[in-house]
Image (cartoon, rainbow, N blue to C red):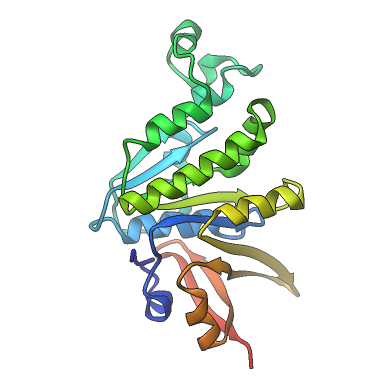
Amino acid sequence: MIPTGLEFLDKQIGGFHDGLVILYENSGAGAREFALTMLFNNANRCELNYLAIAKTAEEVQREIRLSFPEMKKEANINIISLAEYYFRDSIIPMKWISEKSVLGVLKDEKNVLSKLVEVFDGVKGIIVLDSITDLARVSKRLGWESLIDLLKGFKAVCIKRNILLLALLTSNVLEKGLEEELFETADGVIVFEWIAERDAITRWMYFRKMLGIMPILEKERVSKYSTKIDPAQGFTISRIMRVL
């Protein structure tokens, strides 16, 4: 199992099994911070990878730097951007995205999904995929079935090579039926949401499904976790809600 590095959570569940885990969030609810914190907490344990579909490497580096400005931990994160392939057929000038010329990018005839397969074949350890939401937009051109097949293939490779894939998905962007089909392909789905309560915003996290872990949570009667984002520690759990 791969520990999350969140002491309270690891004491309960021991960590995550290899496979595909979807981090499903209301925008800003903490899924991205959870993924980054897990990378930092496993800095000396395994290879760390961040696969960005529509963001440049510079954008990802900026997000990591600004997410936890006081964090003293360091992690060697391999950042791979597929923004060139994502924006290649769009109205966005390639010079905004890449230093390569348009002709240089067009020489590679792979689309973003096939390029992602090529990249995925060369990585291991923990992988953060940012994001399924962006891939879903691409699938409108390439076919929804291609995206589902891709995720099923990723899951098989993860199990075969002991890889943990944390894939970000923004809530309420896709139709409910499409979301359910995505959830069905995954080993786990963790939901991140925020609620405005009086004069404060409360962030919550709960496991919708998680292979090998749900029986533990059922036994412990854990309903959901109240979470915070600390500038020095990253994603943290402040309290839990139990079913009485």
